[in-house]
Length: 149
Image (cartoon, rainbow, N blue to C red; front, top):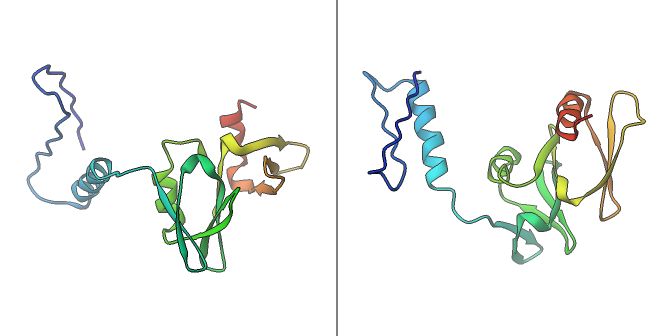
């Protein structure tokens, strides 16, 4: 797919135009991504605890992980069940300081205390709330790159 950007002061808001002979999977994917950008909505996440729903700010979340087919978010107020998939949360939180450390976990870099690099093949992450978690081997290289190690 070719991409072209034209700077024009007549446009106050960006305009995306897709010219194509037919709708292909590539065109559909581009359309979906552009639509997601446009419909981003507010940066809030709804967490559920027993019978209550609570609005969670991304800055209040330490980590998000999946366990027993449930997605859970850890905050100072407790652990909340989320009704979104982990990959959806990763996309929603991508503008914040969240990074994936395993297939089942995303952490907030602003809420980490330190990274213990003494383990062979993995990294232990200590969160500011006292919890510890581990970076899986698959994500060690990307975390080291983020850390500048």
